[in-house]
Each structure stands twice: as structure tokens, then as C-alpha cells.
Amino acid sequence: MTTPQNEEFTRIQGYLNAQGAKYSHSEIWERVILSRLEFIDSLKNVNETQSKWHPEENEWSISEIALHLLKSSRNIRNTVIRLSQNLETDIANVEPPRESTDLTINELITQFRSDSMEWSSSILSLPAEPPLEQTSAHSMFGELHARAWHMFQRLHDTDHMNQIKSVKESSDFPENNDN
Image 1 (tube, rainbow, N blue to C red):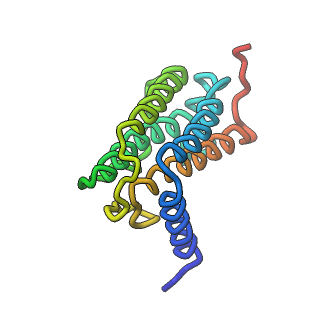
Image 2: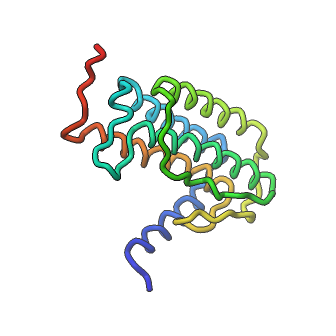
Image 3: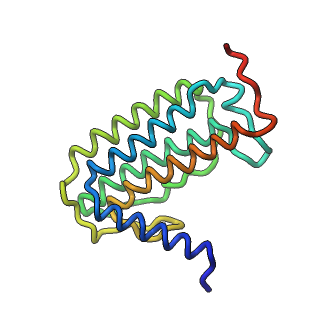
């Protein structure tokens, strides 16, 4: 049975694969880095109390969101590299589960900067025209080729940046008293 959600996932899969086929890794990198810089900016001016605060018991804190995205980013980068080299992939940890962290918000920002530089340097080693036949399945969006996975990183960063924005807009969000 086709549901509106399944139709949306199929539409996103088509978008990621089509845009990935259209643009080179270098062109995709520009879009990914812009959204990554926006994500890093969303973490700035967040203090430790705010970073650990939960809007509701079952909702993620800013630190949990950041840790999830950081771990996922590393796994997506590995998927992009392996698919670009026509190698098998293991996407088991592309969507890491919710996990608390003792990392400070500044430590998370530092790790995001490093991760972003690793993304940038990894692009230089990829073939200009990677094979698009080799795919790896995303849990919601289905089979994606290397550059579609690269495009997915931008979508993932943006989704979680919006999640952080939502946390910050919660009526009980702690005030920043660090000033």
C-alpha cells in the first residue's frame, strides 16, 4: 500500500539520486559545507545547561542531536568514499541511536570542524566521475549511489539544524546566563 509518507520518501530518493547524478562531488561539497557551517553556527552561543536540556523526557537535547549527527557524518563519509571506489558498504551506523554525551558544546563544535575538514579532504581523493551503479540502501530513502549519499549529508545536517532550532524555541528553554 502506498502511503503519503512512502510517496515522500520515494520523492526524496529520486531527488537525491538525480541531484547526485547531476553534480560532481566538488559541487555537492559546496552545498554540504554551507549547511555544515550553518549547523555549527546553530551550536554557538549555547551553554552547557542549554546543551543538555530536554524539551520533553523523550525528546533529544542539543548535545544528543549534535553527537548523533557527528557519528552519522563519519559513517556517511565512509559510505560515500567506498561507493565512489565501487566497494561494498556497511550502513548499519548511518543513523546512530540517541546517546547522551559528556562532551561539552565547545568540544562538539571542535569535532564538527574537524569532521568538516575531513569531508573536504576526502573529496579530493574521489574519482571525478564515480560509478553510480553501486548503491547502498538508506533505511527510509532506499538505494542511493555515492553522490546521492553525499547529497543526503546536506539534508541530514539541515534536518538536525531545524531540530535544534525547535529545541531553542521551546517555551521552557533555559536562558543563556553566560553573558
